[in-house]
Image 1 (spheres, rainbow, N blue to C red):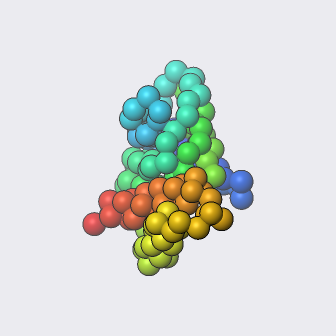
Image 2: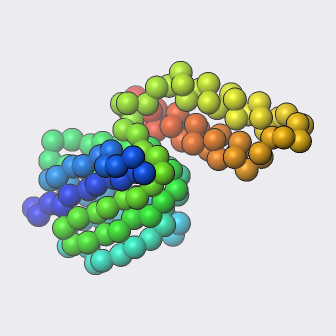
Length: 135
């Protein structure tokens, strides 16, 4: 079976790079998309969610924020603001971030940036969801 490379990049650089990938599942704006070696070249937007990478020796789940994916026949490049492997997620920190975001959203303070709080809540909930995929 032919395999491909998957690379996830954030503003801080490459945070995930895996060779020998058999299939990658992405949550795109058009729905879930499976990508295998030889896929037609594509660029599309992805949602905050997770990327599931099946490779020769196992499966990785990576929590990602909104971004884009560029698919080539032998390589998939995912460009997002944040990305974190499921096993690296600090659940306590994610729970704390969720509580802070909920507090900001429930606060009637005029100084609260509602959109920022909503995005923070979405990221925290996503990180918790992805960490649960390992259970």
